[in-house]
Length: 265
Image (cartoon, rainbow, N blue to C red; front, side, top):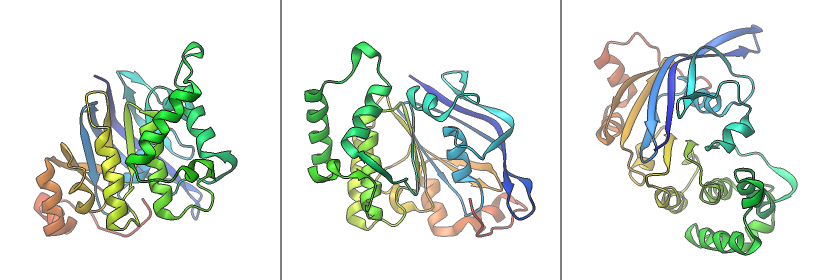
């Protein structure tokens, strides 16, 4: 069993207008194990995407206090590629397009990057695994021949992120609003892919605004973020309560002095 722990995490980003750092995360605490699905919900501007980007080590996010531990080891000083090799995966809201690299080439390179030199995946094994996952996600073989995300629709990009997840098989997947912009059919396919990964060797942190995704990927634990902190944790029923009562209702229930604004996460 692997563990991912966020401990008293404070993160600041540069505000382009004032040219000063602005604190976004103000003491986030979270611990999860493989075998578990956790969901993070919260209004815009509360820092959900900042948390996901910081865990993965993306540039521009300054950790001013706290730590991120993978199996008890701090990963703060590790670059993105090293964190990925250690078993972290981030499915982003807006995946990048990469010209000149096909999906198949990228996937095989990503798989082998996590393996020792004497344990590289063979072409035959790669093709078998790819065909199996393409069928699961109802994706065409032609998708693997296209350049990575180039010219893909929003739904195709999201399916492609889940294909990467299935092929790479990380210990922990951070799924940042994978339901954004998906119609109901695409949402079901994406959820099917994530659910197929559930097991003792896989954990996922799902960031979403909406209950509808959690109808298909039922989490073990739901966390609510407001004002840069996790203010409440519960089971799947917490997400349903938010759907009925909204974040303002929870804020008032907890007596929080937090303004709900539609700022950038």
